[in-house]
Amino acid sequence: MAVELKAAELMVLEAAWKYDLGTATDQDMAMAKLKATEMLAMVADEAIQIHGGMGLMEDLPLERIWRDARVERIWEGTSEIQRHIISRSMLRPLGA
Ligand SMILES: Cc1cc2nc3c(=O)[nH]c(=O)nc-3n(C[C@H](O)[C@H](O)[C@H](O)COP(=O)(O)OP(=O)(O)OC[C@H]3O[C@@H](n4cnc5c(N)ncnc54)[C@H](O)[C@@H]3O)c2cc1C
Image (tube, rainbow, N blue to C red; front, side, top):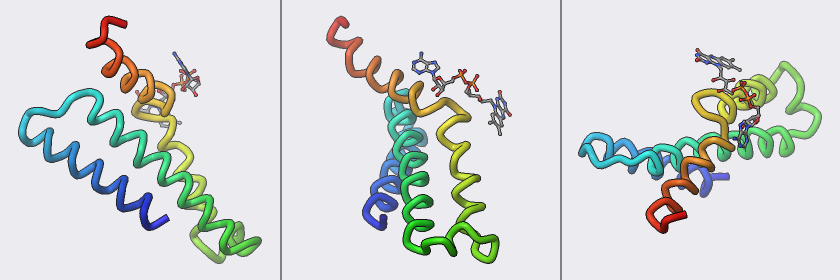
C-alpha cells in the first residue's frame, strides 16, 4: 500500500511539474489520474480488509473513505476513458 501510494504521488508530481513547464501531454495527465484513483480504491479496500468487520463500522472513518473513494474512478473521466486516452496517445504515433 505504501509503495502504491508513493508511486501514485510521484506520477501526480511529475504531471504537475510537466504542466508547470508547459510540456504535459494528455497521456501524462491520464496516467496520473488513473494511477492515483485506482491506488486510492485499492488502499481504501485493503484498509477495510485489515480491520475486518470493524472496518465497516461507523466508529472508524474507513467505510466513509471507501465510499468517497469510489467516485474518483468515475468523475473527471472514468478509468476506462483514461485508458482510452493513454492507448490512443501510444498508438496514434504508430499510425494505428
Ligand atoms: C457525485 C458525482 C458528481 C459529478 N459532478 C459533475 C460535475 O460537477 N460536472 C459534470 O460535468 N459532471 C459531473 N458528474 C458526472 C461525471 O462526470 C460522469 O458520471 C462521468 O463522466 C461518467 O459518465 P456517465 O455517468 O454518463 O457514465 P457512462 O458514460 O454512461 O459510462 C458508464 C460506464 O461505461 C464506461 N464507458 C463509457 N464509454 C466507454 C468507452 N467508449 N469504452 C469503454 N468504457 C466506456 C464508463 O467508463 C463507465 O464505466 C458527476 C458524477 C458524480 C457521480
